[in-house]
Image (tube, rainbow over all chains, first blue to last red; front, top):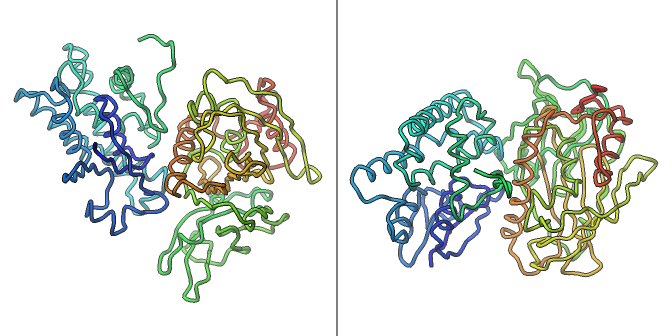
Length: 215
Length: 290
């Protein structure tokens, strides 16, 4: 059974919690006091991940850091239908491309949220982060809006993939980064679709769909 | 925003840091009521807090005090002492430092959410409330200390998981205390030590009228869970609250009776608004009469 090193308010950990829930993988949680304790900077944690970042997934002798890497591992190991990380070359390539986008280009949006929540980035250049976050949001909105025209429901193809999972936390929590949703209507609609997936789980700051509200 | 000119807000005490967070050699830049301040630890171990003026010059804040593990500052002349919480000195409870969390709204919105019972079932579904038990039984609202403190007492609510220490669904009894417009404390029945109270408190540091840092603590009876486990429980709860509070408008709390259409379950919120209205405070309040 895998163990997830987790902090409840981390959008990066939430990526992994979503996929574990959707794939119905039983797992253990090792809770880390990231805020205010900074226990992720202690030697015991650095032995697991020298970068001092959560999440980390441990299974037997395997120690994985980086949520995109963890999603890749879980999809190959536990998704028998191979829809979350499609096996065909074209879809796999596109999924990897958007995974990297989630890991790199959505970081400014995450950093804005971290700063608003924890004040943890005193040296942050808010204007630059804001510009980069809006640029990334526009790129995703374009990708999703194009899909609405061509009949592609998700970031890659007609099934949700781990690229959608990797994008969802930062996008669903954009309001916590004081980012408006109005300029990105296709993202807003995609968030609604994502919340309707079977076994979807929330985290603090992400509201569930109201019971009885139709699609 | 420039420093507020509201004399009532200026004369309050505010928690501005958790003392143990200010390590030697580290400085913390923050704001209080629009006034930039810098907190640091001096060579002799004492904490310092200075106001920074527009030209980069500095002078010590006029009032500084360490209490309950927090550093407290007042920019004016305090009219009341820091809230009295003798439970910090009592044996049997664990102190859980919950860290600082920023919320882009007025401090009064945060207090109002904290003392509200009717959101439990919808915002904290599965822990502090459940959709099947959303009714708020009648409770009392009273003023104490010659009107200086507002209390809501005998608040009873059915909770699926009232604390990190229990998985028992049960009726839990709460008292809410608001000793200042910027502080609230819950006294909540311990489910571990019958007859004892757990305390959960918020000390608010207003950066600006609609931007606030929440310093908070818990004093709990819990002999089984780690601090980190309890911390995650509280951060889950507060993260849920925060997601709602940052979307409430207007961000400044309206206090005119013509601005609200309350139900009976809102008695504590309405008493808080009327109490703020009468206090003369302007900071963080929307005084449009409606």
